[in-house]
Every structure is written in structure tokens, then in C-alpha cells.
Length: 405
Image (cartoon, rainbow, N blue to C red):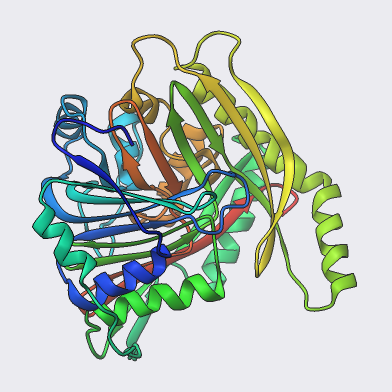
């Protein structure tokens, strides 16, 4: 992060980001954001962020407002962009509100930003007020609190039967040549019998990071709503005019048996179906990036790369390019949102089908979490994410449907 007139830059002794985040959760209950990339299998110079003490806020459904604020600012904005922003870009059928109904954009710039450089174990802090920084650095860990998640009711936008029927409907549409693939998802939502406090919600995040570590984990405390995510997928990274996207398409389970686990990995690596599925999205992302990149600069790196996580093997590919002159981060988002891996191909047709079949807003799911400024960003694809709002909760799961599904 570049130093600017408003922030003071200081290097302080290293501490693990999860440890500092735990101290913050134990002592501070206002808005803050933790972007954790301690397990980054793809980027050597991985960076985690903690942003605390809100300064300015974008809390709106109005993209033009958000765009104007960000483009006239030199600051980093942390938060999310919801999937329904896609309706500002394309004509997509309307769907019912999410159970946890939040605005399309919630982005904040903060008075303190901790920047953790994992490879060199360097911790930089950008701050306005040294008293606020001293306050945070004096925070101490308190005794762990166990989350008490007792579900009162659980609902979904599909029954098991209707979900399978929808898959068959999609396969027939593919056979008719309507599109190549679409990402069909189920939203689960309901209420808890009790409301967890801030510390208990952070403990859920810690438990998730342990059981399902991922490259782009995040904990967002925004207006008493909590977003707890363990995403392995990079949507967009922009730095020094270089733009990178790393879609995931293709998944195989892990096994405790080493021989079986290796077999699962090889089956994924050699699967014609999974490669075809991955390649469709690679072509989609290439097309999206070509709209904002210099001619001839868009290229594919690490096609069909296999990454192994604690619970699954994933197939990913990297697409990158150099931005054209006079193109900024907001222009890139407008040209590429939402992530093609969460829609299908062709993108617009797939999104139309998603809306007609799912019938409910995806909300934050399938959107983006991370930070952005007018010339820099790092946004993950929102998958494997739990959203908590008082006693309400929701999460969403799904996968790409092709004719061979």
C-alpha cells in the first residue's frame, strides 16, 4: 500500500495476523475487516490485512455513487460487492430478496491498516492517530468463548427434489444449444435460537480457518453484520497496471488414504469434463479482460493447475493482462463482474437462467470481498461463506452444471 498524506507509515514487530485479529475481536466490537492470506498456495508474496477504526463509509445500492467516491479518493476501501450489482450492468430478471438483505456495496476506509507480509515476516501499519494505534497494540487475548449455534429453523430456495429437477432442466437447455454451462446454487437460511456476540462470531471464523484453510479467508464486522468466509478463489488482483484473475473450475475430494488421494488428484488432472468446464471459464475471463487490457497483453498462465487443500483438490487457471491507458479498477470491475466461475458461459445467458431458476437474490454470495482503490485491488470470489445478522443466518452452495454433469 502506498503511503499517502493522511496516513503515517510505521514498521512494527511481527505478530501472526490471526493472533492480532483475536485480540481485536476480544476488545473491540465496532466495524473492522480481516483479510487473511496466510495460506496462499499461488502467490509467494502474500499479504494479509487488518483494518480498524472506520473513517468513511460507502453503504449503498447506487454504483455511480460508489464509483464517484472511490475514483476521487486515494484510499483503500475494504468490504464487499454483492452479486446483484450485476443487475446494474446487464438486464437480468428480478429475484426475491435474500433472507439477510444487505446493500449491494458496503465499503469502508479505515484510520488504521495493518499490512502483514508473510514471506518476509514484515508488519507495516498505516495510521492517523498514534493514540488509537497504542490502544490496539495494548489489547490482550481473553479466554476463548465457545459459539452456541442452536438452529431454530432451516429453509432453502430448493428442495432436494426440485434442485435435481433443475439440473435436468439445465442439461436439456444445454443440449438445445441455449448455453454451455451454468452455476446452479442453493441458498440455506434460517434463524438461531440465540444471538452470538462479536467474540463468538470470530471464534467461528477461527474454527473455519482451522478446518478449511484457504488463500482468501476473511472476517468482516460491518454494522453488526458478520461475514465469515474461507474462499480459495481470486477474482481480481490489480497492481502496477497488471490485472490477474484465477478462476477455479473442477473439484475432487481428498482422501485419508494417500494412494486414493493421489488417484483422486490424477483423475481431476486428466478429466476431459473438468478441463472442458475450466476452459469455458478461461475463455470467458479472457474475453472480459480483453475489454480493458492492451491488445495482445492478455495471456493464460498455469492452465489446469491442480491445488490441494485440506478437504478438496481444485483445478484453476490464471489469466492476466496489462490495463489499457486511462482504465482504472472500477472500469475493470464493470467489465468483469461477476466472476465467470459463478455464472457459467455465455455469462449473460447463464445469469438469466440462474435468476429464473434460483428465484432468490444471491446477495454477497458470488460477489466479491477484499479491498480496492482506483488503481489497486485484491478481491476474492465469495464462496464458502456464512453471513450472520442478529439471529438470522444464510449460506449458499452449488456447482457448475454441464451436459455431462
